[in-house]
Length: 108
Image (tube, rainbow, N blue to C red):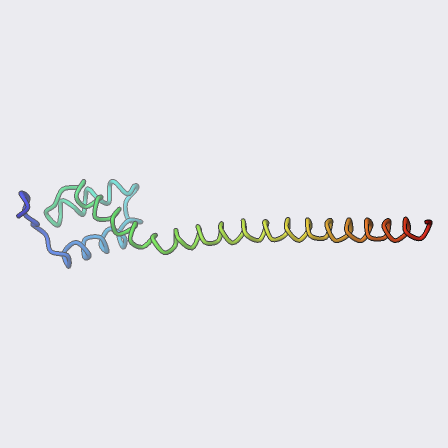
């Protein structure tokens, strides 16, 4: 069993985080909003801040992955472009050397 007791339910935490999100604009800073709301609901400011950060992390998870996916797609598109350019160079070089070989046999 854990040495600490979970004093607040998940529903209470979700409600507190929603309150902060809804009233953040009413205060000059996020910390002021957290301090005011934490005092009203009966938890510490640091605890409420941690809950908000955890919720932001959960919401940002797929978004952050989407950004990573977007970066990966861009890198792959760059690589495809480079490979196509290299293939075109090789194709032209192959045609040049094939023509040179044909020309050489014709002179003999």
